[in-house]
Length: 528
Image (tube, rainbow, N blue to C red):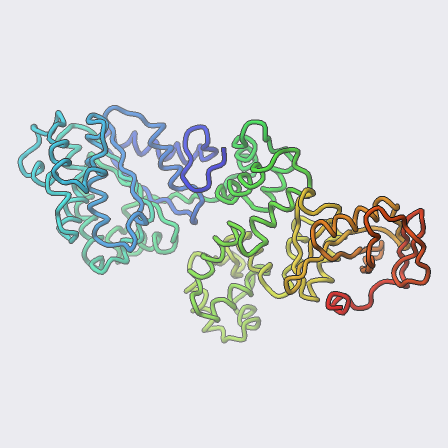
């Protein structure tokens, strides 16, 4: 099954074999008495949390406890995050034996204390440690609580003769705490570097900030962490994710999985969204349905991936039109600083500042050109522009649909792919100012002929769907012509000849469209 709202583990987890081996080696080194810390850098939703949870699942050592925490679990972030860290640490050491989550009991302090005291190891702990554990529920969220939480895993590991792995996602967020300057981070370093039974794996999606946190000479964590970059999945593994995660009876054909990886890349979150939407319908999955999935996912304002990118865009630029313009410039591909300046109308010095403010969304290559890190985000930015209706056709359409899209984009149309069940006999749905127009696409030289039954079906489907409709003909020389079908026959009526009517020659045998009768002005037709 595809899972897009929660981390994946066990059979739902794919790839990352090399990364998991590196993480497992940290557990081995810890048990050997030589702990080494690791910083994992990766964009949002690339699978960091899933990988950490899979590490826990695959490393079931009787003498190792795991604490997995995400800074975003406390919003807005404050010192209460350290209470959560401390309680989760207590859970790691005692909850399996007690059969209850002490973190969940923390809202009922008396019950928490009674339950904790039942742990076999609790009476053997020193008096200070017992007092600290019993006070966790009511301790004020301040720097003293932070000090207690940051050292608790080591104190419990020593007292119980075990080891502990603390995996902290979005760790860089701690730098934003008011007391972090010379406070929390320095305190963490001072406590952690003396520990021998605890190791630390920190993760972050703000890669520049996390990298600076562990490489800057002024940082408390300078040279204390090794690095791991967690990027998109490899194409072969990404295809397997789609094919192996499909629900029973709804297998995704290899060709569709291959196309999805080519369009969406190897980000597992994007692929999970695609698979979830596709397999919500019954197979077989024809080309029209697959195109509809891309439209619903990415190329509509309410698509789940589209909404995700909209939030990311707002996070990056806020109300700064200059930052938005810089993103727009880079959406077309890598550019040098001066090229971005020309496109945005800003000075090169200002562009340098804009690029710095965009942070990890952009990267500078060896050729000194700047580019957006996520090509799917770049594609979404191109689609949002005026005339961006052409973008989906460049990705998932054929040549004829691309030519039609280019023509209609200049007229302000948005084009949408729909499944055969929801579009009837039409290939595309064009929308302008709320008016829906079904498009029957023909790739042929003129004249184009329709049988009586095919023409009647187009009229029938248009009535059923409540659409106006056009025939769009793309000739071998890539010329695009639009034809007005005129009013359809009443249900059950026999076709009649309508000689001289612009756009059609109709007879009992069918309808023929000729070049001289193509529409000169689609917008005039639309508004008539």
